[in-house]
Image (cartoon, rainbow, N blue to C red):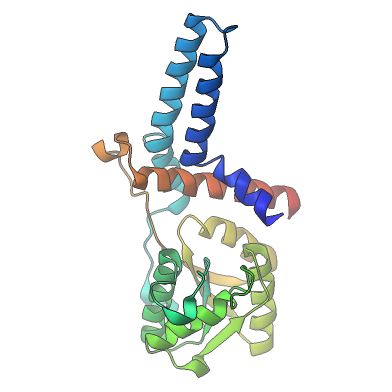
Length: 252
């Protein structure tokens, strides 16, 4: 199932789309039954799709609406009783090279959590279980990074069971109940927070959301019109969240 999911997601990304477009053009241009006019039209459509997949003129404004203004008020967090951070993966070989093997998106969330801890001294709940075979739980690896940032181990609570956002919020409900927490600061990527908020409302968990990893500021500039890896990241992030919301609307 994991392999099929990743193959499906690959073909929806820019590299996957390039592969499909190249394969389709190779077939059409090498098959006699297609006319020259049809081939040229198909090639033009392929070029347009390639351009749209590598620029963010259309997708950036949409993602910006999902992310919001990416601001938060530190003073409001001091009245809450816990900090919650959702992990976003770990890489093979973490134990031998902890910081470079922590994905940048997870690291941003951990840095924000550590900063909030320094201001509030509230315990940090890390959500994330084992998502890769023969690798430790994401919460375990993330806890080591937080400790390296100066957060005491007794102030860290880990969840080693959840493997997706829905399961993470389910485990959060249990952890908060077990520790007597009534509300929380929830830290995650800006594009991820609307989905989290939907689940928090469902579970009636009071929380302030803290956005990190904002990649789609307001406004359009010339860089959004130029093909780049950054624009492909914006497109992939938007696609991932749209698919995630569709999945949650259907199954949850």
